[in-house]
Length: 147
Image (cartoon, rainbow, N blue to C red; front, side, top):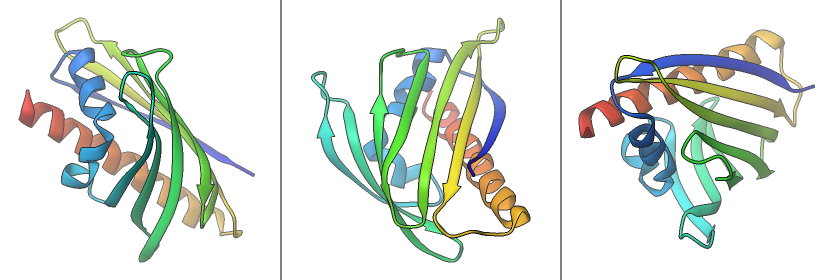
């Protein structure tokens, strides 16, 4: 069964800037702590990454997975679904970017994870919490440092 989680953070930048940084998927290894390698397998008609294979740190080892990105609601939403994975059967999610009314952006991160191998609930929740916290922390740091 898939586990779902949602976290939010406010970033001191416009929604467009937050979207631009999050959509620059090829740069993730430069700033996203657990992402070790990104291979852009296919691009859409606008040149944006459409199919992307990642190598990331997970559970003290390396994991590989491929995500398919959806830009249908850009620049308000960046969404993805997993198409392949070695330890996950589902790693679907999205970033939602909304103005906070004070010149910044509230970023909401939704994530749905399903593991191929059953794990105790507390381990799954800890892993999911780590993924989300690091993703939001690192995105905030990257956007605010390059603004």
